[in-house]
Length: 288
Image (cartoon, rainbow, N blue to C red):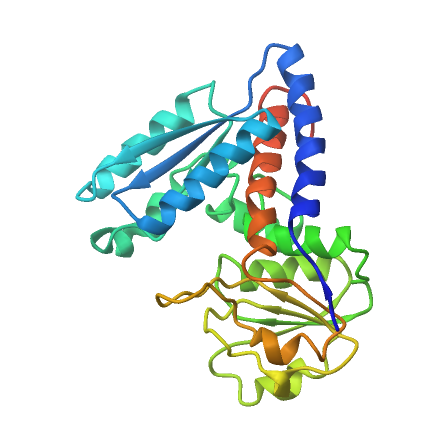
């Protein structure tokens, strides 16, 4: 039976450190503050926002929701971001994506408007450059960072190990691959056009699956000795699940994250840690 790598102890450890640092900032008159910017209503966003508010309270971070109507124009969203850029009391901004369909074509340009120093979820070009070079402003996407934090917490060796990332999205797959390279892992990225993903995942020491396809990681993809980090949360009206066919994969591998209760539990803690770090940097309390 595999070791189940639950996210709660990782999230709690991160939150404790973040709360300590937030407390030090408040003693200097700085209250770490995160704005979540939303366009329209999305049922999934509601759960994420509630989780972020709860985690912010534990970490000493004020979380504010600013909601725009579903028919907001690109100019409306850009103006809201400019206001956040100019508000010295705001240290971090999270723009909930995807944006409504009529804004999708302009999403990259909208994201680029955010001051990278307040980009706590890696959505600006400057943040992307920082992920790829290891230098610069902004932060890695929270979910990708959460994968590394979880592996580090449980003592999973990354240096010199072969990590296979399934999925190449700009939010998880590609940044996760870059973060693993920083940890000195040898990294392979698989995607929908990879001819034989199972052959590659069976070679891995660590698998991070972020394909967003339920039961796409099967017993044929794994072998004993591996650690599986399942990032995806898939639901079709039934119980939530990840990419892994958990019942088939868990008996084979050495360790696996559950869905729910795995990486997702860590992501909001990373968001708060990034916000406090941004507050430290913006107020001269730290350096990149």
